[in-house]
View 1: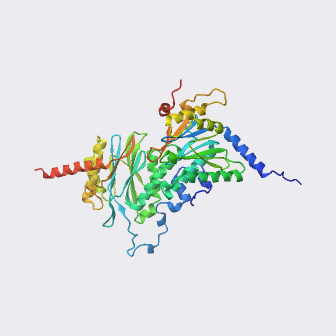
View 2: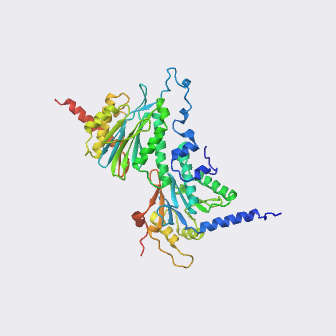
Amino acid sequence: MRVEDGGPLPAAFTTLGRSSFVDFLADQAPDLLPGAAFSGMTAPHDRDRHGRDPEAPHATTVLALTFPGGVVMAGDRRATMGTYIAHREMQKVFPADDFSAVAVAGTAGLAVELVRLFQLELEHYEKIEGALLSLDGKANRLSTMLRAQLPLAMRGLAVVPLFAGYDLDRGEGRIFSYDVTGGRYAEREHHAVGSGAVFARGSLKKRWRPDLSAQEAVAVAVEALMDAADDDAATAGPDQVRRIWPVVATVTASGYLAVSDTELAEVVRVLVAQRTAARSEG
Amino acid sequence: MTFPFYVSPEQVMKDRADYARKGIARGRSVVVIAYDDGIAFATENPSRALHKVGEIYDRIAFAAVGKYNEFEALRVAGVRYADLRGYAYDRADVNARGLANSYAQTMGAVFTTESKPLEVEVVVAEVGPTAERDELYRLSYDGAVAEERGVVVVGGEAERLQQTVTQEWAPGMALPDVLGLAVRALGAGPEGSAGRSLASAALEVAVLDRTRPRRAFRRLTGDLLDDLLPARG
């Protein structure tokens, strides 16, 4: 149902004791849940003549790594549809709330919708309860939301997020990865998901150190994405001609902060210069 | 055979209004007052957990007096209304006017159909890009809505406080000045008697700050509030 201007608020709105927006939405406007439109599409005739679901843009590599005092999250900008580049400037890293970030890989349309709902879920809880959820609480909410997407994941429309944030109780940055069934895993040090994740993880393993500064951690993240782009066609490296940089953000005790394009341009310039110099030596 | 007493509709409505007014008069007033960079809310409230002022949406806040359980239900309904609308359409499509309308309908329906009216008075405020586009709505227990400029006071001594505050208020005042004015008014005794001086710990103060990027609502507590309040001699 919809509340239009001027109507009295239905009883479900004034009932106290529930602080989840997702549950409220499921009751009041289930058609607005991510993927709701697909739930009726089960018959084979909805698929194309090869028996596949309609092809949809796919978001690729995202990663996160910790450093003393926080966590860095980064994602490339490419969305692909088969061998075709669907979008060059996709955003895959988002603030979940003031102290956490969420990044997504998988079916782009559903992923972005899931992020929008997750952001709202955290804000809604904060407004109704007057308190922030714990970092584990936020990670668990995302898990529950993901579990509801399982039927879609089984049809090939999977969304795999990466969640990271600053744990105000423990005073450190933490990373959580997920699988399509809603399984939630606390990751140490660093993690990557998406098509280029294998290469990004290799790069992170070599470059990550326990004593990285925030700036160094940003450079490590960008370098890992460049390495992923080098070997995975679905991942984009920094585009120096169009000046499209990866989306990179830090989350620390002072909150979520997106790294500016100027800083990223400089990080990329230094990395490219280093690699060029390494080749011309000898 | 017994006949029920005839009670005229005028009398029924009058009794209900008296009942609601009595309930509201028991509560401490809330002063909502505009300043150059936003809208400030101040009330006497020693509780740190049971708030009378709350965030509804990016640029919208809620203040209420009366029975806590009743206005808390309205506040939660407002948050749900705003979040649902913003999710179905866009964040920019949530406005105070629509919410005030829904509250008015809800409160009006309870007043005429339920056995007891809501013992609450509510203010819905929206901070605009400029002070001229700020919106303040006062809603009464019977669903009556009034749009106000600059200052709204609800609660026990609303009329008297509204007069004192409005006399001294001028557009474009700074935050410390309006807070000083609001706190003086809240502490002032009835005509002729000496006023009380309220400590920051006994106050609930919040602002809708125009200059903040998305969510304009912020509570002011502790040292932050002490710095803004005029020093007491």
